[in-house]
Every structure is written in structure tokens, then in C-alpha cells.
Length: 252
Image (cartoon, rainbow, N blue to C red; front, side):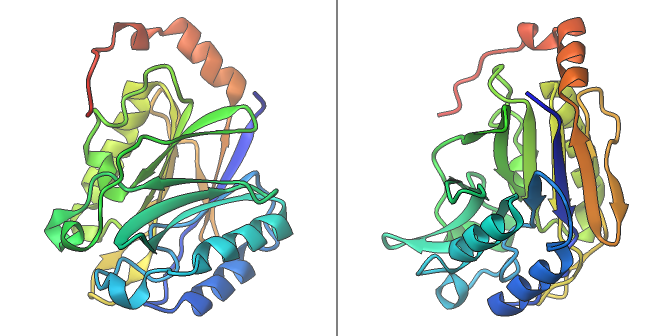
């Protein structure tokens, strides 16, 4: 396991305009060097509840991600609204440069916004193996449910992508740090910025925390970067074997 550089884009998502967002992301990230590019929740449309209008039906977002991953030789991650077999999903894609991809359907749907009335919940916890790192995929509201994200010695880092608005931003910050500490893992939380079509504001609030709770990300020109240090993580886990004392849970 070597060090892994992750770069997240603080994106002001253009409301319901996939082509505009694809173009914007390409311009902002095409000259960046990283192992993983991270994009916000529903980065191609914004967090929009009329899925009939905007959800991908022909893998539009996935196909763009495959092309961008290949062009930049960088893994590309983010979620999109997807229609499949008569249902809508908030689907997190992790796309590798060789075209292989992994997907996680958001488990915890944000009932406060009516997401649960439109989208169907995922049923599986998804951990991706990439460049020696075991990475758990999570989306926004999942952050509030620690049992689902419990580390059973099966992952090294969590990626959260979100549209988490300003009124609840302190919870976002606190819970990201807590997930890192309690799971002895890197936690990278990427939030969108700007104001969406529902007039909700999103301040710059993307962070990466190490297993000891320290902030390890830096932000420049709306790009949030962090390096997952393999040696530091392994040494920390070796010294503080807190996961050995964890409770057992049955999630489903």
C-alpha cells in the first residue's frame, strides 16, 4: 500500500445542466495531478428531487466519468441520479482509468427533503480496492449513521460526497472528524459550494481527517487535496488497537 493523493473539487453545480457541469469539471481538473478525483453528490445536476426530469437513463454521467478517468489517468468518483429497472437511485460511482467501475447506491435517503419518496435505498455496503487501499463509499446523509459505516477491519478510508447546506454545517464537520477517529481511518468529506435551485447555500466545507482526528487537507483554487499516508496509518493502528474492542452490529 503506497501513499494515495485524493483531490476533491469544491464545485458550484449548475442546476439541472449536465453538459455545463461536465465542461466545468473538465476545465477545472484537467491540469491537476492526483490518484483520485472526488466530485460532490449529484454533481451533474444538483440535489434535485424530480428524478423523472434529470436522472440518467443511458449512463450519461458514468460514460463521461469513464472518458475523463481515461483522459486524465485518474480515478474519478461522485454520485448521480440514475434510473434503472423502474427505480431511481442516488448512485456513487468510483471509476478507474482502465474503465472498470464500482457503484454504491445511497443507503440512507434524506427524508427531510423527500428523497425517500423518489429514490430507492441501496442494500449493500461497498468497499473498493484501489492501489492497495480499501475505500468505503458513502453519500451525504449516510454520515449520520455510524453503525452502517463501522470499520470491521475491512477498510482504510471513507469517501463522503455531499450536498450538505449551511444551516447544518457544524454537524457535517463534527461527524466527519468523529467517523475518522472511531474507525481509525482517513475520512475525506467533499461538499458542494454555491447556492442551488432550492435557494440553499453551501459554504466551502470540504475536509479530510486522519485516524487521530487531525486535519490533513489543504484547499487552493477550490481544489481540496489530501495525501493518505500508508505508513502513518499502519503505525497508528498498530499502536492504538481500538478496533479490537469494537461492538458487533447486525446492520440488516
